[in-house]
Amino acid sequence: MLKRSFIWAVVAVFAFSCDQFEFGEQYDEMGNLTRDRERIENYLATNPYEYVEKIEDESGTVILIQEESTLNKPSTGSVIYTNYTGRLLDGTIFETTLENVAREHGLFDEEKVYEPDFFVLNSNQRIAGFSYGFRNLRSGSKAVLIIPSPHAYRDRDQGPIPANSVLVFEVDFLGMD
Image (cartoon, rainbow, N blue to C red; front, side, top):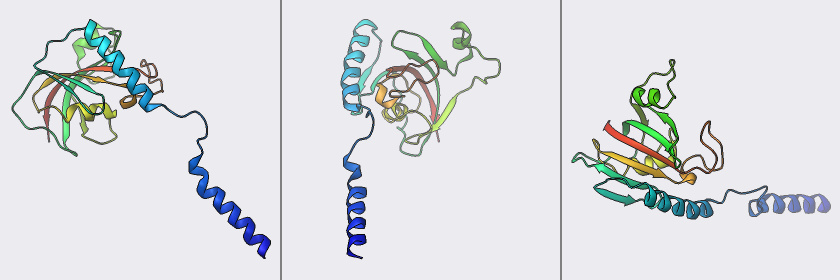
């Protein structure tokens, strides 16, 4: 009986201490944020945008407000309506809600309906960087969101988006519920 109790005690200690061990390669969020901040600075130095305000969100997301509105900012749970065009830092467009942009850049899909997108702020419906960007905008604003890879697709390829990509979105914040 004592031997069995000792074995169970060893198993319990091992089981509760497993969270101290890291199995496999771990994603280096802070390292990627540091690297992406430099990539974003270089991108902005060589790709000047006109904007009325630049916001550097605590998440590392950069928001360049091109047209400011006087309407309200969204809060958690707000439904955001937007048109957008997503690019890589090299300028490659990978997604858009605008049919004319899709046609112009060879992305047009006859089966896709080109209309404003919507998502719930601070939900898992879109990449985290969308929420970080839109929480800083007023409904009716136009902006550029530059989202570091840890708040996009991290170290995963996502269709035409390579792993660890900084993403640039030109957004038109159409409204919210």
